[in-house]
Image (cartoon, rainbow, N blue to C red; front, side):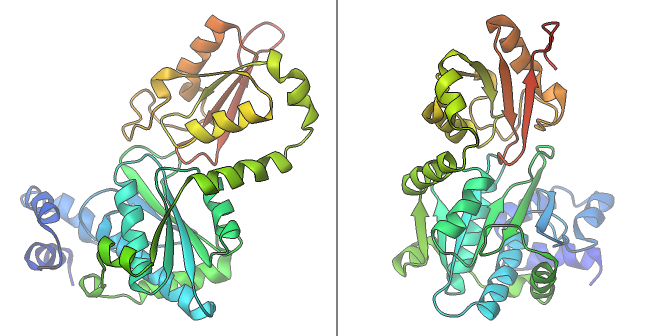
Length: 321
């Protein structure tokens, strides 16, 4: 099916909702945009998929997410016996919760219990939850440090790590085997809850995760000895790290941790940075202003899904590098 035919199919089929059709009608006179949205399927590669958010086969939307989730569910059903479960987390990006819920409902539709976090959580906590709950896999809805227009679907194995090449190839094959997007079934949230295939998780996993992190803390005596005198500025860059990072720093002994207020709360627009990448010094511009004003020892930043960290320190000349 060519891209124009695919576009028209999305407009006419009862499978796609009104909001999707309205978005597509708005580009009816822009053939270049139609082509870009429909000339191919959004690729599911090693680890998952990532793309621009929007309507179309080459975009991240609830239908392409549903397809990816069903493919992952089919993979899980083929390699795991007995009762099956998946843990699901998401970051602060546009549509992240919607895509996470869609993923959970796809799992429920396949008879797989979905443990869905009740609000945004870091990717490392998802990995922990997979192992802690004995799940057969995990999913994080995130596009990491990419621009705000993007989102993604990252798949994890039963060990809490990203899928190795062989397993990734098997998942890719299952996703690609779904040729008709409109044939993918769905289930309501109410039905999934009633059947026990959708379970919301939160504080109990947070508490267990914090205890696990403390057990693997290197040189745990150092923060206990020097933490009360060390001044730290932290920025979550509008992402999921705010609560867990500040909590663990406090619990291991760092009492003087201040947060960059402009970047404290989740913000899918990432309003104060061009790219929310803590590997780029530009992302620390506001945090460094805080550091200079408060004469702190250390600046820490994490990306939106909190699996990437950057650190700024003061050199011998008093400059933050």
